[in-house]
Length: 353
Picture 1 (cartoon, rainbow, N blue to C red):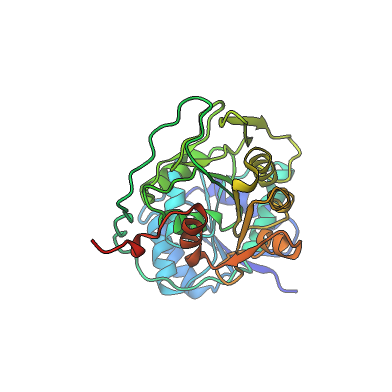
Picture 2: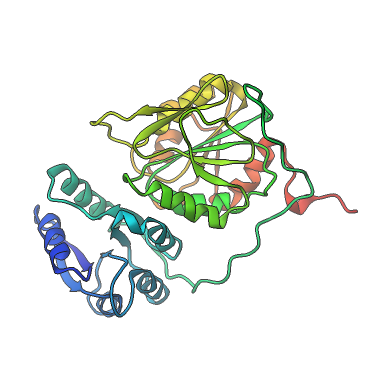
């Protein structure tokens, strides 16, 4: 089997040295080019035919965000953003223009290094398409229905809740799904997205610029409100309590997935039972299958993103194969499906005045 052809892009020679040592350790990854800025990256993407590009963001001449957009406009290549946690919000903008995933800059720690090599192997096989250049985003959809007022303590002013599990490709899928929901969406939305420590706040800020609904990272003891999107912290597992508040449980050091999708889904099923809507999106692994089974057994609704619209048809495929999914839905159809499930009319179906 031929080695995976990788172009590294970072203005720091030291960072490239560390990355090269990590990626070439097992002999199945070949560094075919090294770029110190975005313009060099564009040239190498055209002439070296890499199977994957690792991309820094803050660079001279041309930054990584501009380079990603140009590369994806001319000839799509799988791109893995490797950046400092301080650039988290910009990193998620990179996903919006075509990058596949975001990871922090690695150390020579053996687990850290192996995790990065595994990601390169996985993402190098993902089919990407050339994209149109960005256009100004449309205004968020609006409806004529009032937004629910805040809930008093231990009172539930919403009927159903949505719990979403996702991993690789999840941020892009969430952006497309959540940005289509109206500002009066009546249910709280809770999300467990596998993510590296230090990046979740940037993801919340990024999603908040795209969505009509407020987006935040869930906090210990916080009261759950309708029409709000909550992200699980990366360092903790998100649970709900019978008092309709959040509880954050520490994630074990040897946990394969952080945060755990199963913990969130199972917790939602135990508290909300048949009023739970469980959704599993693109991702790698089996996390979420047990939690969806708990929702199914509690009489709730279970949905999965279809293969055609998934970056990685892994987690959602495992759930489908396990028989815990009631309906497989294309990502473009998921907003309308959720509106149907929570009993909120779609904006395009308003009665004439």
